[in-house]
Image 1 (cartoon, rainbow over the protein chains, first blue to last red):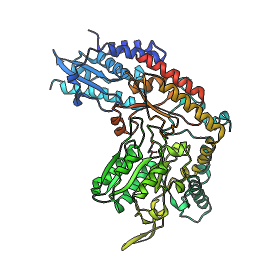
Image 2: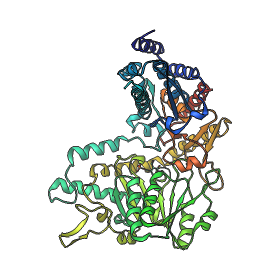
Image 3: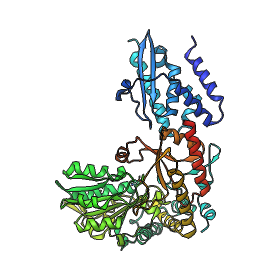
Image 4: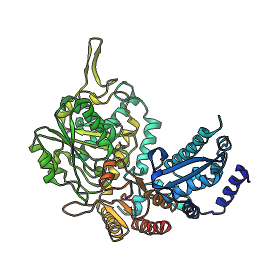
Length: 139
Length: 407
Ligand SMILES: Cc1ncc(COP(=O)(O)O)c(C=O)c1O
């Protein structure tokens, strides 16, 4: 199995292949479409990530010692971003996620290229993933 | 004035974003600054800095004069009968809070009613809700029609002997329609109800005349009208200002201060406690002169052309739902809020941004209106007199491209 850092490096390389931001958006939109359907019954307020202009739901459950994420959003680009995060962090042990520095976000260039309101949304997504991981670490 | 010459006054129009020319269509949020405003700010900051109204030294008198000249300029621009009817604040929001807090706590009490248009900005809703919580007064909502129109007959049916004040925008920041404020004032005054007009957008697209309209309060922000941010105006009729208690206590708003109690200065000083934004206020003078020139013939013709073109393009596109339609006497200004079938406003705004186009997306500080139209948010393109027809065409083409990216 690849390490978290290896997967992150792959994503950064993949994303860097597009020089044009509209191509990056198209890539994110496609990525969002690969997310499995998110059950309507899980779209509850406690799964809603605060601080985004669009609505983003994130759910996490433990399976064989790993944290499995599923997510959805009513906006396509945001859905792509959460899909990217899910593809990196889903199936990892909570300890590993909780000790990550999340610096690959910086390397993707997402933060500075999204408007501040959006960047806030991104920060909230990361914070939520980190918190979910911490809550599931072995005591 | 010719459009190119007018544009050349705004340095930011020549900047690029992501390597593309900036097409700034978020003017309803804040307008760009013309060079004369930038120069005035720089001149005041670099040469005329001294606190106003206090000292006897030379620069203080220059700074005070600039500040008071701005008051005169605003008074004459909006047709107030005297500069003492103009209170400077930090913005439209602060002006609205001042009225709700000062006028409201003195004259609005339990059982009284406040009429608020459904299309108001949060800044003209929340201060009144806070007043209602404190006093036991209540709010009556003046609903808009599907086209975004406010119906005068409905206003008449809302008015009762308990109606104390009616709060309505001159132009809503979402609907972009000019409301019939003259008629609203006549109707309300005949029932003994005051009228507050939120002119944050109205000042930019019309030439208000508060004496002719007869409204009791008119508020706006400098920054949407080309002046420095942090400047705001409250116009109120003299008798009202005289009857209202101070809003904040502090320096320069007093007459005498004793431990046994203080007495207050006359209006408008009574409402200007503490050091004011004198550097910003000075920029209102050049800003108003640019605003006035923006409504002259050539430029007005361009604005009409741009407005007509965008209105046609958006209303003839079946994927697009436009909110705030002209007709029945409602004139549209070039401010377009809309939603697009199957497209999230945030996605559209992000894609347009990368094409160099700045538009607003979201609730636009009018959540009750979003609920009214059953949407989580809208996209808004708001044009200023410096926006060209070719920018408008680029916007319409880019929007089409953005929609197809999301299809
Ligand atoms: C109609 C209306 N009222 C009030 C405001 C609040 O203005 P400010 O934020 O400058 O105080 C705005 C600005 O968005 C507005 O458009």
